[in-house]
Image 1 (cartoon, helix red, strand yellow):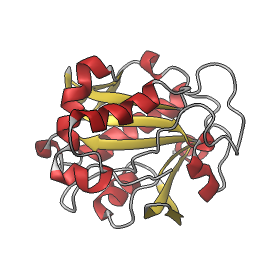
Image 2: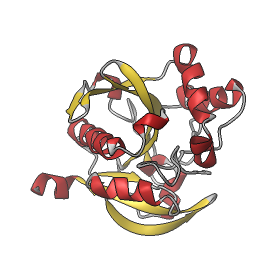
Image 3: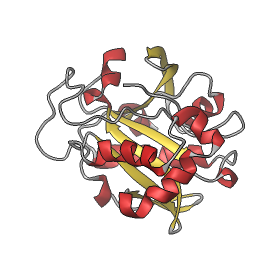
Image 4: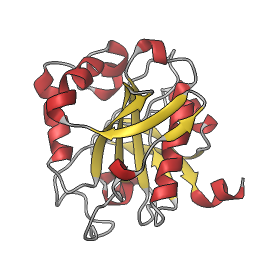
Length: 225
């Protein structure tokens, strides 16, 4: 997995590592994938009410969303971490690997008040090459995020939506005890956003393309609050 960091610059407020989307059969050393939907059908989770408004994860459809996502990837603040700048074909290939895979990684638009404003990837961290770099547990679920528009950065929205989406994961994936992320250690606004969203810093991990901060949000700790 060559994870890089998500679309933020030092003046913005959130970001998580870009996953290494992979086809079926790759990265299965921690656990064999069970039959059925590996992420418990996020398309059916419904909206989350946040302080910023009603937020929803909408599955990416390449024919509808490619142009928008590619534009976001070509924002220099995003490209510096996601490394997907260039022609639409670059983003298309990144999306296709997930959309044509076995469901362990899935892309979504974050839609706020009916307007797409962020890009998300949910993935089974325990079935991902990331699991070679930390003590993964069954059904660990990873999050990656970029805020698409510069006007949405630096306002605390990353924290708001990281908390909302990690709550959605824990509410709708009963077998998942932890939500994890691995932002680049250099992206201090990203790490701060995760901390503010209820994640804790677990460890520094050396990944193929970066030194990352392993961030973890525990179901047990959340339920005690």
